[in-house]
Every structure is written in C-alpha cells, then in structure tokens.
Amino acid sequence: MSANISQQTLPQKAADDIIRLIQIENYATGAKLPNEYDLSRMLNVSRNTVREAIKLLVSRNVLEVRRGAGTFVSAKQGLGDDPLGLSMIADKKQLWSDILHLQLLIEPRSAALAAQYAAADEIRQLQLFLPDSKNSAEQFYSHNDVAFHLQIACCSRNLVVHNIYTALYNKLMQTEVPDIIAADSPFIACDHHKIYDAIANHNACAAHDAMQAHLLHLQEYLEKLFLHIAETR
Image (tube, rainbow, N blue to C red):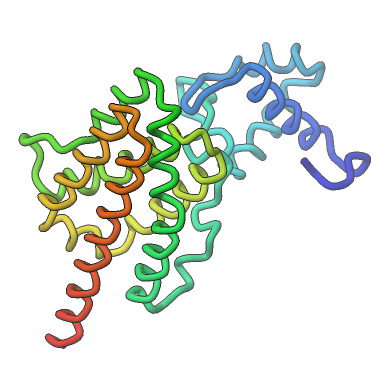
C-alpha cells in the first residue's frame, strides 16, 4: 500500500483493493481474476479506473494480462526482476560462493520443515521435479532443479524464504553457470532423490542432513570448477 492513503489516486486505491481481494479470496498463482465489469461493480469504481489499477499491478508484477484470456495472478508474486540487485555483482565466482553460504544457512532447515509439514499432494508435486531418464542433463537442471528447491521452500510454510528463493533462482538461471553444472547432473539427481525420500517419509533430521550434504557437494564442485576455469585462461 502507499504510505499516505489520502494522497492516493483512484487507480492506486483500486489496486490496493484488488490486492486485498486476491488475499481474501486466496487466489493462487495463475488464478484468473473477475473481468473488468465485475471488478468495477465489486470495487464500486469505473471500468477505466479498474483498467488503470490493473496496469499498475502489472507493472508491479502482481498481475499479468493475457490477450484474449483475461487477467491472472502473476507467478512473480509482486517481485521485481532483480530485487536483490544480483545483476550488479560483477564477480560471479564470489556471487555463487556467497549464495551457497546463504543456502547452507537456510535450506537444510527449510528441508527439515518441509518434512514436517508437507501434505501428500505437495509431496507428489515435489516428485514431479525429480530427474526423468527421458530428459537430457541440461533439461533436468534448467527445468526441474529450481522448481524442486522452490517446492521445498513452499512446503516449509515460510513464505519469506519462498519469495527470497524465487528472486534468487530466477536471476541465477540467467548466468552461464547452470549450463556448466548440468553436465554433472547425475550427482545432483542422486542428492535430490535422497532429499525427496526424507521429505516423503517425514524424516526431518534426514531431510536436513541430505540437503546439507547436497549443498556441500555443490560447493565443492563449484570450487573445483572455478579453479579449472581460472587455470585454463
């Protein structure tokens, strides 16, 4: 919301009301909103005001408009394209090192919480992101690895962690490192299966240890990778 409500324009107030509607109705990512006519009636404002409010929310990554289909809750969940300012960090080796240290602080505990709280349907969803023999290594990493970690964050019931990782992983996938890691996806796949098994069995301690081991494997691999890159230049 804007800091000073009295200074808000009608579209800004309508935008806030639409956000409240999303929260009250518990619209999930990808959910379709009522059309402009219904929203104008529900919010007691003109259709033009609703249209401008939607534009504001699209610019804030809260909504997305699909031509011919309607208005939907954005998967970006109100996050900017680079809210953590990662694109401004030139030293990619240091960036990945620092991110892994952050992951080691947060993700093992998130995995333990996921083992405690994950419902059956969430575990089934997590299983979908495990490696498939039909997929190539690159397809496995780029399409499933991020989704696997984000699903664990979601299962942990910590919305802040989930949003942080959404911003983090989306930006990291734009660097060249994931493509290099893809060549070693078998070790990642093995680790992911161990993490999944622990969460599926609701074993919090095993989930914590499996995630920690996975991140340490990745840390060791990246240290060797960056050393090799430096030596060959």
